Image 1: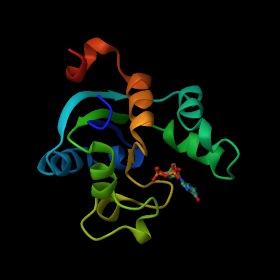
Image 2 (image 1 turned 90 degrees about the vertical axis):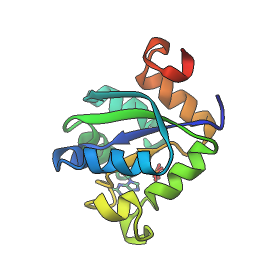
Image 3 (image 1 turned 135 degrees about the vertical axis):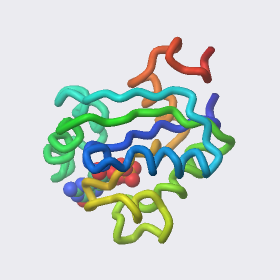
Length: 142
Ligand code: GDP
């Protein structure tokens, strides 16, 4: 499956603002197939685990608080070159640097509350997909 999937989260801020529908629509129009999806909420412990790579960063605690502050939508997206193509669709981490028309440019509220997550490598796409979904919840594994 490497190369064909990426993991996204619609983060609590974008979910709260009712932007789940428009974001899913952009994902669909860009040619991604949704092979798994769930509405859920990260516990503090789960958010700490998901973002463990950033543990030493000054924004870690604040990021964990934000990511566990309300519901999210997690989804596995399937497409050739999924990781890179989705990173292009969402735009730069800091929305001020994101290109016009990208998801983060349109829906981010700040650097931290930047609307969506997208895996940064094929390896992490697999790890992050396993973090959220059992095999029988994923059409890419059925
Ligand atoms: P991503 O792969 O584009 O999501 O970026 P990173 O992996 O570098 O960072 C993970 C998440 O941490 C980002 O999506 C932001 O929500 C948040 N973040 C990154 N850098 C900063 C920062 O300098 N300050 C704050 N407050 N949040 C940040």
